[in-house]
Length: 402
Image 1 (cartoon, rainbow, N blue to C red):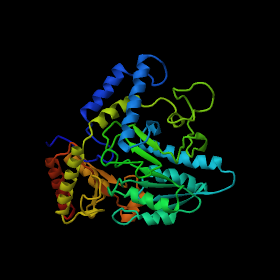
Image 2: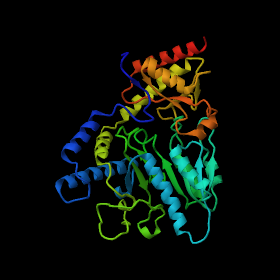
Image 3: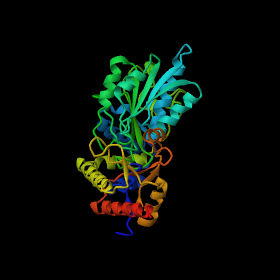
Image 4: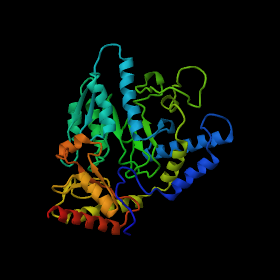
């Protein structure tokens, strides 16, 4: 047990992956590794079929009305960039006057959202309002409504915080927004929830939703998706509110110098990471509710153990209700990154220390300077591993008081 790594950083990327993931990727490289859509031969057709299977599985996962509305990307950050740049650039290109558009976002967002929006705000291209969260990581739906103006074209909201694990009531928030601002596009970042919790883009009236393939879905890195709803990209492509700056081959239409206007080709250019999506297909097939139940049971065991250590400060929700399998805590007088290093080097335990690419949330909970220690169990985490982790934290706390 001593030489076995205890991996508690699944919020960053899940590990180990299901055996079927590597097997599917090896099978693809051995038997199906043609260029999808770029040829009529069997290898190309087989590669294309892998991508269509991925599109169908992801569409089913989020209840998309059409597989064509699932855009395959190189990850969740790629999907967020495609959505944000796509909406803002399209609005600026089609606006006939000098309207300065407005975007609403929140303090819980990941830098994939914040830095992308900041580019436009810092260059005076948009106005931006950042809605705060409370100490537990919740964003008030009414505050989102109040932040919107007549010039608001986009609102972004993470389904769950990657720092605290707090889950937002997306359906309630969007209903509140629609009562006053029906035309605003709502972008939901599901990086931390896809694979853990049911998501329904139709029932929740989501316009744009981004998915990470390598976290809760337990697939390979370099895989993700963007769901594009009817309000964002109507059947009449002339009314599209999302554009793609990428240009290139799509595998469907080679004639002409304009990109196709039909989905998904309008927002996909170049060769997809087909080998990665072969692995993601296997990962999605291996999903089960029992996996999530196990991860939450391990989360409860961690919370109970940390609560038993008086010196530890736990941030966010006190119990497992309303959270993903993610916990943030600190030890007094200890830098979170130093604790991370000590756990790694002295105890062979992998956690994440620091700001977690979410600076505004850390600022909101008072850990902007010190950061926090994030622990996130996974499908292979055992009770014995959790007990060793808690013992290691007790040891570090004891040493810090000497």
